[in-house]
Image (cartoon, rainbow, N blue to C red; front, side, top):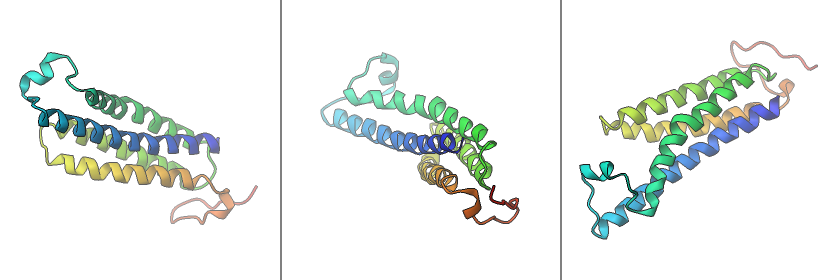
Length: 156
């Protein structure tokens, strides 16, 4: 079960990297399209057509952020209850909390653009936390020093 936990944690980290790649790819395509004479106004969203190839990055970013990453994060938390090293449940809970924060910032960022700064920063925290969660379960339980409040683990 430790391997499943680690794979899920690494998947969350990879998904966050994909998110960053998609939003920058879409933004770069939008900038190029505008530079070539494209017009971005309210009718842009109502048209229903992708005016440039990189536009696909925006719905991928939205779907991945609203469905993909949350599913993997919740599976990580559920799996954490069957993994022995201390601190894995807390690490998975932090990942889930950061995912919830990320979704909230992403949604509210459309109304309050300043929250986009926090959305980007939180993505970095989420990426690091997912890697931490994966590494936390990588070592045998006996080699991880117990943190304050963690239960004492004895080798089996």
